[in-house]
Amino acid sequence: MSSPDPEAPADRPEAADPAPATPPADAIRKPLLGYRILAWATGIWLIALCYEMVMKYGFNDDSLSWIAVVHGWVYFVYLLFAANLAVKVRWPIGKTIGVLLAGTIPLLGIIVEHFQTKQIKAQFGL
Image 1 (cartoon, helix red, strand yellow):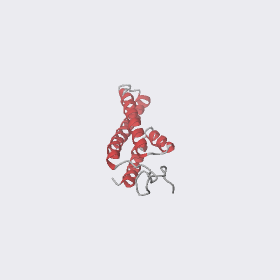
Image 2 (cartoon, rainbow, N blue to C red; image 1 turned 90 degrees about the vertical axis):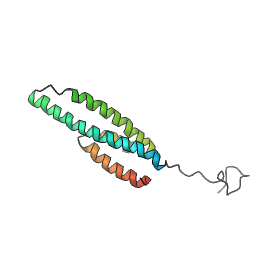
Image 3 (tube, rainbow, N blue to C red; image 1 turned 60 degrees about the vertical axis):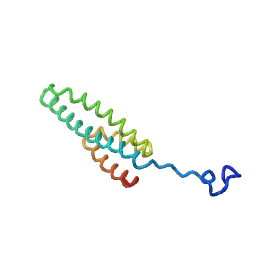
């Protein structure tokens, strides 16, 4: 192995190839917690939105129209937190999009959150 600096001894850090940087566990804990909270909040508000749609189109009750607005904003914040976590743990783009879209299907966001949290905790030793 040749070092970038020919005059640097082999035992100095500059001579070694850089190891892939893995974020410390503390840098993952906060984004993971935020993602978990928002995944659950999004899932619960999505179930409430389904209830609103049944009431609106099934029983002609328009009194719950505010639920869609709340769910929309909660989902937007979920997207931000999930994207932040994806960047921190370096998910591939396909996985990131899958996790982001999981918040659009009732209960799927909560299920995906469970499995992703389990995987991240194992990967980073949390």
